[in-house]
Image 1 (spheres, rainbow over the protein chains, first blue to last red):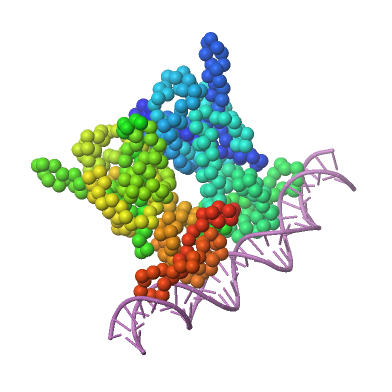
Image 2 (image 1 turned 180 degrees about the horizontal axis):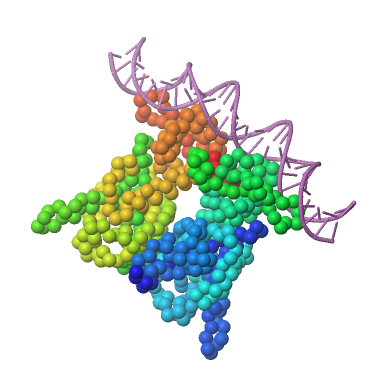
Amino acid sequence: MNKDLIKYLSVDCVVFGFDFDKLNVLLVDRVLENMEQGLIFSDMTLTGNHVYEDETMDAAAQRILFDLTGLKDVYLEQFKTFAHPDRLNKENDRQWLISDKRNPEQRIVSVGFFALLATPKVTLEWKGRNVMWVPVAEVAELAFDHNLILQEALKAMRSKLLHEPIAFELLPEKFTLSQLQKVYEIILDTTFDKRNFRKKVARMKYMVPLDEKQKDVSHKPARLYMFSRDIYERTRKELLNFIV
Amino acid sequence: MNKDLIKYLSVDCVVFGFDFDKLNVLLVDRVLENMEQGLIFSDMTLTGNHVYEDETMDAAAQRILFDLTGLKDVYLEQFKTFAHPDRLNKENDRQWLISDKRNPEQRIVSVGFFALLATPKVTLEWKGRNVMWVPVAEVAELAFDHNLILQEALKAMRSKLLHEPIAFELLPEKFTLSQLQKVYEIILDTTFDKRNFRKKVARMKYMVPLDEKQKDVSHKPARLYMFSRDIYERTRKELLNFIV
DNA sequence: TTACATAGTGTACATTTTACACTTAAAAAT
DNA sequence: ATTTTTAAGTGTAAAATGTACACTATGTAA
C-alpha cells in the first residue's frame, strides 16, 4: 500500500450531528502561534485531510470519520468538489500552510462529503487539535473556503432530506415521532402540525411502530419507531413531484 | 492569464440533447493507430479536457461547451467527481495516454458536469476528433471510466428532473405540452396519461400558455408554452415530499 | 394530591390524484 | 372537393391526500 499523501488532493468532511434540539457540525481548532509573537490567530476548520496515492476518495472520507468516531458505517455522501484557484489564498491560510511546511501556491482540489451522525460521541482530539460540536447557526468565520463548503453541504443535505429518507441517520435506531418531526423542523427551518405530521408518517409503511416506549423521561413516554429500509426499497415509487 | 494545463485535473462533460424522440449524449471518436500495425483500436469518449492553472472548474466546463456549440449560456451542473486510482488503467487507455505523451501513472481527478442542450447544433470536429450525438440507449463501451460517469450523470439528471424544473432546458424556448410530456417519459422511462399530465401542468402557474401555435406540422398544430422562471421563483414552495 | 410536561388523537373541507375514450383541427392524399 | 391521416385537446367521478384546528391521556416530580 502506497502511504504517500497526494499534495494536490484532499477531502473535507462536513459532519452533521443532531442533539434533539439543534443541528451541529464538527469543527477542529486551528491555532497558529510562534515563539516571538505568541498567538497569531485562532479559528476553526472542517475536518479534512489529504488522500493517499492509492486510496479512493470515499475511503479517505471514511478514514477521517473512523478516526473521529470509531464508527465504520457512517452515512456519507460526496456532494461537491471545490477547486477554486484562490481557495487557500487568504492571509491566515497562507501563514498556516507555510507553518505546516506546505506550499501555499499549490492549488488543492478538495472533494466535499457530508456525514450524518446519530451518536454525539466523537474523539476530543484529532491530529493534535481540539474537536468540538458547534451549532450550525453559530458557526463563525472558518478557515479556507470552509464556510462555503458548509453552506453547500447544508444545501445538499436539505435537498436530500426533502426527497429521501435520511432523517433517521441523525437519530438513534429507535426514535419517537416527536424526535423525527424535530429533525425536519430544525433542518428545514419550519414547523409542522403534529397531527398532520403523524398522519403522514402513518401512511409510510416503512416507518415501523415498535411495542416499546421511551424510558427515563419525566413525562408520558412516547412510542418508539424504526425505519425499515427493506420495506422502503420494496414500496418506493417517485414520479414527477418536482413541485409540491 | 496562466495557460498551463494542470496535469492531474480535468473536467468531463456529459452533454445531453433531446430530439423530441430520444435522449442523446455527445461523444467524440478515439482512434489509435500507428505506422506498422495500422488501427490499434477505435472507441469513444465523453467530451473532457484539462483545466488551466488559474481557471475554475465551471469555467473549464463552460469553455468545452462553448467550443462544442458556440453557446455561452448552456445549462451546466457539477454532479460528481471521479478520482479512483485505477480509473485510467485499462490497457487501451494506457496506450492512448502514452501515444498522447501523457503519463499513464499520473492519477487524474476528473470533475463531472452534465449539460442540457436544446439545440442539436454542435461542432463536427473537436481537437481533431469527430463529434457525434449518440442515443443514450445505444452507447457502447467507452474509454476510461466514462460509462460510469455517464451512468452517474444520468442518475443525477433524472433526480433533478423529478424535483426541479429543468425539462425546458432540453426543449426550444417555446414548446408544446406533448413535447414536454415526452421529455419526462423518455428520461424517466415511463408513460403518463395525457389528460392528467395536462391537468397537472395547468396547475403550474409558471407554465405560460402562449397565443401561438406550432407551424409546419402535418396535423392539428399544438399550442405553444413557455417556462417562466420568474413566476416559478416567486411561487415555489417545497416541503417534505420525500416520497410520493 | 396536584402540577407539569409531553404524548396522542378526529373531523370536516379542500385539493390533488387516478382511471378512462371521444371529438377536433389541420395537412396530405385521393 | 372529399377522405384519410395524425396528433391535439377535453371532463368526470371516485379515491387519496393535504390542511386547519384543540382537547384528553399518561407518566414523573413536587
